[in-house]
Length: 330
Image 1 (tube, rainbow, N blue to C red):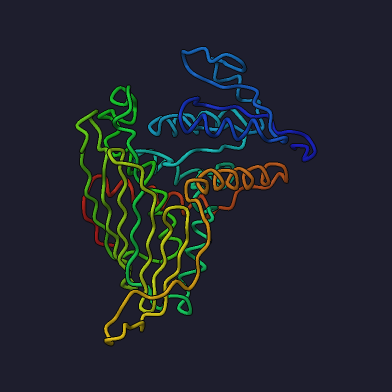
Image 2 (cartoon, one colour; image 1 turned 90 degrees about the vertical axis):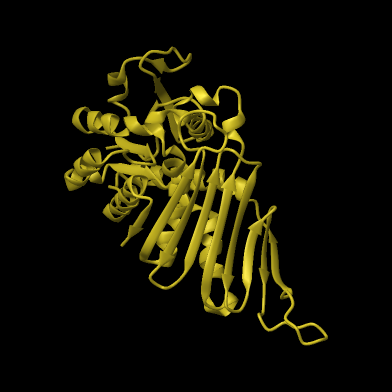
């Protein structure tokens, strides 16, 4: 039993980039103590260890290492430890490991939390609020563009993200968030197409992709993600009676459809609602909320909801199938 009044003892696997972001957030929490940061060969200073077994007695372990290592660490902790497991998405990178996750006992599944943090984002909340028929009518189209210039940073080509072993890392680490939360909001997909490319010609993996989803409701969603672009972070949702955008730190709702100029021609609807909103800040806030959820389960000694586990695996399965087939009819 973990004493809810005491700080949770944490072990972390991973130390750079997104791992560092998680570490920074954990260091700010009064209910968390980072006991160990594990790397198989490197010395990382304070709390550093090269011995994975040092983490087995921790209350919780954070697996923020390269995607292809996730299942190896999950299996070791399920076998040797009673730790709760916080694992970054994508859960696993191949079908065999996915089948092994599916075959875990319910007890083991309830110890694992996969960090699809956009489920906890304000962006997700806003979309839920704005997609009601009373706001913009029936939705026909959703466009998401999230991109920046990581591929042109010095050293990118030698990182795991640019490796041929991780050809679809952008799909697995970025696009997966948007596919997951769209599916949560808009129901069953009918078909999905995926168009990856290496625009920068730096590294061996794809640095840009475009994904198009058709839902059974008739809604079409398109997602563009890139590491070879200027910074862009925009979402647009179009309905029969209006549309709204999340762009340039603003959420703007335009309505109604029947807005005309003096000659009787259609013109852009007036702004019905406008609020300040930073999608960039929302990413870190969603991570905080995801951590809050994970810690609340630990401190209450509660098991994770199986629905969360199963939904994570469904998204994982879709991503793996998409990396093999550029078009899937469901």
